Amino acid sequence: MPNDFSLRIRNAEALPIARIPVLSCDDFRQTIIESVNSGGRISAYFGMRFAEDHVRIIAVVAFEDKGDLSVFSMVVDRGYPAITPDCAQAHWFERELAEQWGIEPVGHPWLKPVRFQAPYRGNAIASVCGVTNFFRINGDEIHEVAVGPVHASVIEPGHFRFQCFGEEVHHLEISLGYQHRGIERALVGGPNKRTIHYMETLAGDTTIGHAFAYCQALEALSRCNVPPRGLVLRGIALELERLANHIGDLGALAGDVGFLPTASYCGRIRGDVLNFTALLCGNRFGRGIVRPGGAAVDLDGDMVDVLLKGLSAAIPDTSSAVNLLWDTPSVTARFEDTGVVPFEVCEDLGLVGVAARACGVDRDVRKDLPFGIYRFVHIPTATWDTGDVFGRAHVRDVEIQRSFAFVREQLETLPKGEVHVDPAPLMPEHLAVSLVEGWRGEICHVALTDDRGRFASYKVVDPSFHNWFGLAYALRGQQISDFPLCNKSFNLSYCGHDL
Image (tube, rainbow, N blue to C red; front, side, top):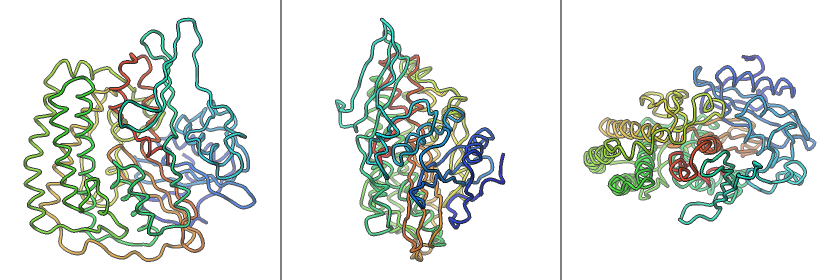
């Protein structure tokens, strides 16, 4: 591991931008490849404008076994040898870089836009990304099935192109970008009054997770210490968000195989958990809870009693509803061996969250790169080893149980004191990396300030960005009719990807 080429920092830590190593192209490429081969994983990989129309590419590699992050960079003009052929984790990142900055990763196996967005400089899409054709398998008995981007429900737009032999899927290509809103571009020059609202709407079902990551970045850049009570309230809110979504997902998986008892029960229980969040802040999705410096709301004794009473009912109700799945052979038969992602493929692709833990990968930011209250209170990581729909459902079930236990314990031992302090102005010309374990997996925010302490660049990596290709792999060799079930077992975000 070439440690001398990189700078190691902790999660939610800031450092002067001048200290970030600037490597030669060859050293940068080898550092990424060797870092990943030695147990690292690419958390962020992005460009920012540099002098004389050059672009500085910054990489953030997470080392879960060491509990730290490696940060390094290189400066390029128009191209460099692609990393993807030797490191599959770089695949989507390099496509994004080409689309945004017109930088060609020479030798990239499938270079096309990921969001179809306006470039940051020049006509990047036309000059570098070229055609946007879909991958095709030729043969007299191969047929192509196109789904979306408009779907027969209220879900967001995304296009899926299947190459099939009969009912068997040989390849699935996923095309996104229909929800692109230019949020990262809008963040430059902040923070301002709008910034927190951008963060809370990056992905509506991950309001608390993204707001948490943003606030941590600001607190690192202002050397702000959140009071203990504020840390606990943030943790409670984050776990309530995880609970609502996991319970909803298990109900949706039940619905996808036509098992209505669990689908109905989980739909109702998810609503109860959302109401717990509404009790905290008046919003069922958690808007208004997490703010720079701590929490914007507090709980009094009566509210704590109401929440504990609600948990006492929700915990056994959830257990009963979910156990119906495991006690019904027709359900488990549909879940088992469907949409398998092997351990080795999971590691090669750098999957995160439930999708990774279901493959047997012990990966959880709360444990590996602890933040907030998780630096003091540990939630055991839930894993399984089959990498299929059953594994992803099982991991959700165990995480539900452990999140319920965490929330109840924190409510019963809520520390006294303030919930918020006012952060100082942001330090100029600094970088901060903030990782949070959202309910889908690792959320990464990287903030860089200019000489005035304003955002010169702001990068967001939603967990879906890492996992969409995992879904594509899970469909290989499956029946095309298994797609809805596999898709729901990942439950990735369109808008979280299409920033």
